[in-house]
Amino acid sequence: MTNNETTTSSQTTPNDSSNTYPIRAVERVCDILDLLQRTREGVSLPDVASITSLPKSSAFRYLSALEARSYIERDEETALYRVGLAFQPHNARQLEAFLAQAEGPLRGLRDDTGESANLGVLEGPMVVHSLVFESSKMMRLAARVGDRAPIHSTALGKAMAAELPEERVLAMLKAVEMTPFTDHTITTPDDYLAALVAVRQQGYAVDELENQADGRCIAMALQGMPFLCGISVSAPADRLTVDKVPAVVKQLRSVGLQLVRDFLSEN
Image (cartoon, rainbow, N blue to C red; front, side, top):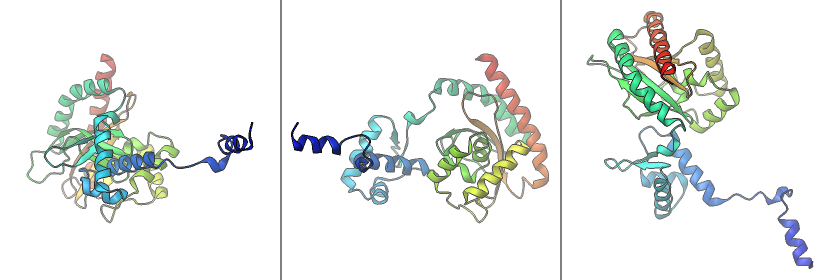
């Protein structure tokens, strides 16, 4: 073996800590995916290019490659990019069947409370609103099906995060950067972990004007499901007052038990 060969071998040994080089293309893909995971409405091509410090033409090539693999999708009307079907849970068929079963009970929850009823699923650090039945009242608080919201500012996010190990929750919080949406949004990991302790103790989570300045939401995770999901009731805070929370919790618990029981009996 020549000296040059010996040198090359020593430079490429897996045990050499100096051999940890970043792979730029992979990092850029991760930057784009992290960016789209954090968005609610989607991100435009110019914004992707600007935020990731990529030329617009390069950003478009990355986005096109990711779209071809269904890691992201492009809204034809708004031209905004969002995470795609490839990030859906592996048990997507079970989820689809569950959502079909849940429509009736969730609609009933909306009718009984008079407020918007929601079913959300956890995908990465985001809550995806998979079913939404809006209140019939003129002033209402409601997301749209497919809307994404971060775990740190939502009752559904807190309810589902309370089911996870602390280290996973901390990783998710880092991904969403704990953006403050109102003066009441929890913005530090320590405060969030403390809030999860309360969620576990009481069995439900409350968004106290944390995601929208005039909104209150009560949520509960569904126990015993093969994927993390939860249901909630949301409304303007001056109508869904604090004294009404116990009654809503009771209704959520009843509907949640029905949803789990019906799903498990079919699967």
